[in-house]
Image (cartoon, rainbow, N blue to C red; front, top):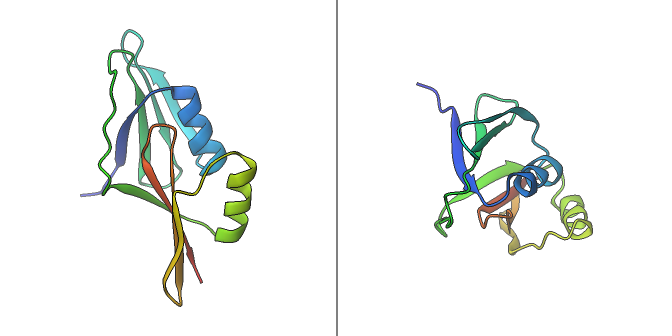
Length: 120
């Protein structure tokens, strides 16, 4: 069995797509309507993807503080500079738990915790 995707409901599809495409660097590969006012988008190029769902009837979104999505970056320092230029605040970190790994957390436009990790 293979893990296919992880899904979140979003407050604003355009804002969320901008974050995941421009900040995280994911490619949008599918986008379609799924009923009155409901829109779905899939992002990512590998086997595991992210599914974003916008449903205007869903007024509240809830993300647990112990859940995050992790993405690897070549340079945490360059990413931090780029995030600042794009108005994205680092929520926590950088943290270096060992000589081989550094990471930090930001939040997406919906409040989802996003981790960026650099392997040294």
